[in-house]
Length: 340
Ligand code: FUC
Image (cartoon, rainbow, N blue to C red; front, side):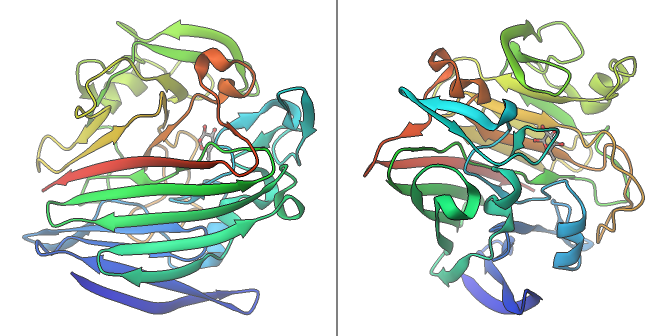
């Protein structure tokens, strides 16, 4: 394994580091300390290394766009209506950052932190203690985020926390994939996603508590199809694409929950997760103002597949429970198997 840590940029006078790992097959991942960001996923091709992720040249670009591009997301992924929730009998209200609701951890989430970082053996490790003063969520949380690269081309993303006081914790990563080498959008890519139902959402995209059927609709990917086929079938809705919480069907532990593939190059990313949901977002409204390094900003420029616990678990424990008690530890892992 080849490791590296270099200065990438600065934020508020602090250094932002880029940390990288290269395995025996010349596959490289790199991360930024700002946002514990997954910056690159480089695979070797005849034409040279190809980045399967979207990225920007400098931190200011990450701060001026609101796409959470490849950011670590926490404490709670998705939207909390009016920032209000209960843990047991205790009511909480956290800071809003979108139409009075709290999206992706609110205005001071994981994506805004310049994390302590180190690269050791085959791991990039980020640590930070986020306090209730920092982000308005109850309790303090010791967080360790680890990206591991293996010689069989797997990337393991581990979230480990220890809670001081009761809190809620539902992290994810907002990686945007585009497996195309050229300057194309993701409509030609194929997706398999083991989900027959998705959450019903209101006009502010807050879960209503109901579910909707995906099977045999443009939303269904239980047998693989192109993202373009789904997007074409959704041109009559305001978003003209997908931004939805897919509930993962029962599956064997060692089966992927999602597989994204390029039928021409045979490059693919299989995602393994024990969480009960994946948010699928097809970058519907994106435009030319976004200065990606290897792609022109355009609708459908990338696709995010965000493994998490269904966000309505915050008010309905039939969908899981991501609250933590004082002194409790929690661990989640998302595994990405890359083929090229
Ligand atoms: C996804 C979507 C949101 C938002 C964000 C950047 O998680 O659900 O609507 O656009 O990403």
